[in-house]
Length: 308
Ligand code: UTP
Image 1 (cartoon, rainbow, N blue to C red):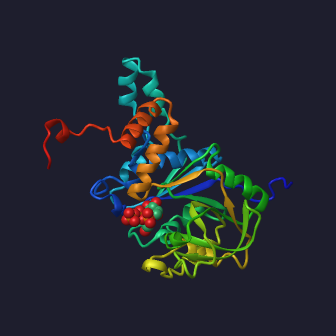
Image 2: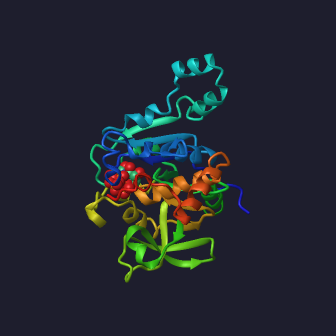
């Protein structure tokens, strides 16, 4: 077993400059990453996962109307004083969960939403010449051990570049970056190619990348070409594919369940999954689901005996 021969991953980039059009009008002025999952905004879930994995510097790539994201991590003295006066230490603890160590949050802006690859490129000066993680806050992974922690463990063995992957139905490959595997031991896949959003008939596999990456800084050289890929956007997958020839590139089948909170259905599923995992909310939710199954949810028109 190696003893950390690779530069450690200390920094994480959170691209949060997307438009979130699938949640309009909720996201007209509020960033998609502020949508609450079990009482915490999506961005806080991602930040907590990164900190659990040992990340020291958090880099947000923000855009217009995104100020709320950085403010969420500010200390809130007035609210703290009010809660203290009311003796609500429970709520004070909840509030403190969004405090960050001073000087650990860095911000840069993506002036135009030209794609995920472009957002990452906007963070190049803050990342500098070292490996870094990328977390897309709208991908949330429910796991005993955080997805990024699992990745950092694998990176410690493998070095190079690493993406988190899951197997998807073949008809879904057009929604993901897809891996062309050189070898696959069921946990670690050695990657020989990557394709962004392939047509199912042409996809090299069904092994698909979720929003978690550990990358070497050379990716910025490839992103700097500003090549447009799928959907006319500057794609991170295309720049990563160019790293494969010169550097190690692996994919990790993480343990856990990923929810696509960037889509309305995935977001609702995640809320249900978290609600069912919480002993405070699970009994009421289970009861509600049973009644839904049995068709015994009262409807107001039933009471009134009216049909719309
Ligand atoms: P999405 O593909 O989900 O796009 O981005 P979006 O704009 O946020 O949402 P829709 O499709 O309009 O509903 C994936 C991640 O990449 C970021 C987003 O903020 C999200 O975290 N992103 C995307 C950027 O930061 N900049 C971009 O130009 C595009």
